[in-house]
Length: 403
Image (cartoon, rainbow, N blue to C red; front, side):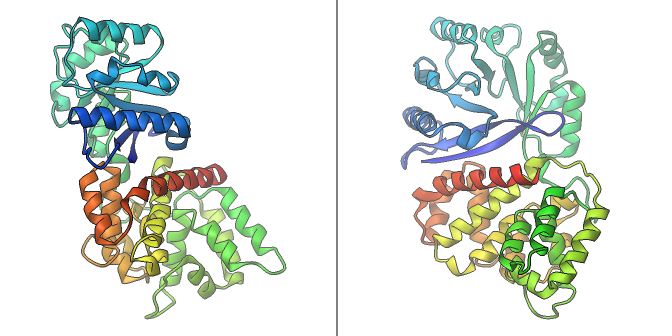
């Protein structure tokens, strides 16, 4: 079974919830009738048994339901405080379904209408829906003004899906949309290097300083602190890359040994004074951490185990272009890191490219592609969800410490 999540943002770019993408078994590739029912049933049972918080971390869980599952009591396994019931756009609407939606609405379940293209005032499920989702590729924003005004008048929550650019996000927000889904948050908003001073939690600096004050500071512990913060890691690599000549840095620990403890202490003090707040969603940092751990775990379980440190760095820096508001080529051009990392980040070639492709496929629910890529690196594809869950848990723990 695979489960991935895609964040859904509020207007301030904080996470409101996650849409869960899943495949319940080897024969299921998506919502295709019988296999869709089995997929959803499998995921619901797993979420009930293991706890939904393990994957959505206290946020709302948006889950797609076909007609068969909407009419069953399976969805009531999950708490109505966290579940958002997404009614798929192709579900047949009749009196039985309308009565079921009315019952769920009265019981306090949040209902979302997915990929809404119907006549707003005539569609019989609108009165029971709290959230209406618009796919802006199918229904461009400029065509939605009238229906948006009507829905806002009815106090509906509007969600713009497949937002890919900052401009689309700003337009949708100006129109009155409340929620946003897409990869706009993980892409640079401008091309060209911007202010490179990014936010790092004071907690991280304090932990580094506390370790440096010890009689015998540990490079390993210092590396573990720094590698949990993509900003610190990137800035460390930029400092070191100008000093190592033709040498390549394969890990954060190796970079620290080049710098030395005394200089590290001076550098951290300077960073503490330089810090400026930046308008970047925390989810971007969380995404980098999840990818870092997931990349490492995938490499360890595959024929790329000897490159697990490079794989971890690949995941950590996978969104550095968005963090720095520049393009990836500009972001990595002066870093003395392994060519395996560089070529994968630039999406050109190299042994680690398959890990980047595998993670991209997972995040987008491209399950068949995952099967092919996992086979290519000789890993058991059935463990990927457990690795993903472990990576989400690890990132959550890190975020709790540094923010």
